[in-house]
Every structure is written in C-alpha cells, then in structure tokens.
Image (spheres, rainbow, N blue to C red):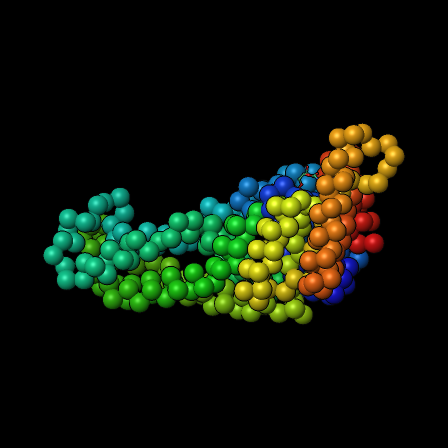
Length: 326
Ligand SMILES: Nc1ncnc2c1ncn2[C@@H]1O[C@H](COP(=O)(O)OP(=O)(O)OP(=O)(O)O)[C@@H](O)[C@H]1O
Ligand SMILES: [Mg+2]
C-alpha cells in the first residue's frame, strides 16, 4: 500500500531509521497531510532526545498532547521518559525506602531469588515503561483516527519493538517473586515505616500494562492497522543498516511497505564539483537501493530531494509533503 493510502486507512504509522536521516521531518509532514485530509491525527515522538517540537516549530510540554497551531485535527506529543516511573514506585523492590536491607536479609533461605529479583530491573526500564504507556494508550479508547510515531534512531527503536517480550517476561518474574515475598516485604515495611495502609498498586498497574502491551503488539503486527516506514539516505552504510532494520522488523512481524530515500541531490547543471561528486555517489547507491528494496523485496521507494533550506515548520513541511505524497 502506498504511503498516501496508509495515511488515509491505517490506525498507526511508525517512522524509523538511522540518526538524522529525516524521520521527524517525514513523520511531521505526513501527519500534517493526514490531518488536512480529515483524519484526526496524533503524532507521538518516542525518542527520548525529542526533536518533534523543533520540527513543528512549537514547544511541546513533556507528556502533554498539544494541538498543533494552524493545523486542524492535529495533536502532537513528546512522551516523557521519566515521569511515568512514579506510577511504579514499589518496583524499586527495596521494602524500606532509603535503607540498605542486605544485612537484615542475611540468612533468609531464599536469598538467591531475592538477588535475582533486585538484579532484574533492566537498564532503561523507565524508558521502556514510558513506551509501554504509549502502547497502553493506543489500546485504550481514544479519539484519534491515526497515530503517527516519530521513533528514535534504529537501535533504540528495535529495543522498543522487542519490549513486549522483555517486559512481559520481566513482569511475569516480578509477579511470581513478589507473590512469594509479598508477606516479608509487607512485614518489613510495617516495622520500619509504621505504614499501616498498603497502597501499593504497582502489581495491578503492571498486570494491566502487560496486557495492553501484548494487545498493542498484535495491533503493530496487523497490516490492516499498522505500517513501519523506513527513512534512509543514499549511502553504502545506510543500505546495510536498512537491510538489518528490515530483517529485524520481519523478525517482529512488523509490516513494512514504504522506504523513503531522503536528501538526494537533484540533477542540475548548476551543481558545484563537490555536489556533483555527492550526486554521483548517491546515484550509484540509489541504483543498488532500487535493485535490492524495490525489485528484490517489492517495497515502494519514495525519493526525496535535498532541499536548500532546513525543513521545519508548516510551509516547508508542506513542501516536503509534495514529494512524500505525490
Ligand atoms: N530532504 C531534506 N532536505 C534538506 N534538509 C532536510 C531534508 N530532510 C531532513 N532535513 C533536515 O535534516 C535535519 C534532520 O532531520 P530530522 O530531524 O527529521 O531527522 P531525524 O531522523 O528525525 O533525526 P534524529 O535521529 O536526530 O531524530 C533537520 O534539520 C531537517 O530539517
Ligand atoms: Mg527525530
């Protein structure tokens, strides 16, 4: 399906690729197009180093969906990778906050398990949970016809795509161990904090999150609901990187039908020697890209010229849209 038809028909579209290739620009330009074609659109940046606000030329308060001024039907959101951890305050797993429990736990028979439990919090779990919250959001009732994801550079995005497995396995273990240790934790907590009321609903939240993540994964794999658009540039290294990304997406069953080849030098007699050389290099790679991804793998290629200026804010983003969605 062409990008245009996807923007008109799907529920989600994810833009991903290497750093700096134009993911945010393509995502913003597509979002404006979809919104102006009557679809109530939410564009979400899942990259902790956000640039969506810069691209749209507006300030986006972290975690707050903000209407895009001048475009009907368009809302933008930069997820806050830190804030949501507060919902899971008990996941620090230390029964008494700010106190080293290791000495007191000595001699308990299940010490091995306990160590496993504390070492189980994977690095970057706060970001993972933030992304989990996004997946949870797409699973709950909302008013948007289309959600566009402006994702983080490749490696990071792939970590997120494997998140349902990671998180699900991790949550499963936590649930099991927390059930076993729940009593001990409760007792210690009372002894040291004089806290009578146990208002920890982390487990409940985690179970809910886990369920939505698994459902969201199903949606992400459904070609009638979601498609991943790879953005790349015409360079040798980008070809191998795109191949790897495509393989990973296939592994996770994420549908891909469009690849954007961005920042191509146009054919012009006015090109300087340097630009001529760049164009020659790009055309050589473009030939390979067409051969591998279009002829070989049947993907639609969308070729976009390198603009003279930076592409940001409405007018320029619309201009890019003419190439992206012609
Ligand atoms: N076709 C183009 N012509 C000229 N400039 C472009 C083009 N596409 C993108 N740019 C510019 O390149 C810069 C990087 O684009 P963008 O922020 O969209 O990349 P990104 O892939 O989202 O980067 P990051 O990995 O940092 O999130 C921006 O300044 C943007 O205006
Ligand atoms: Mg970006």
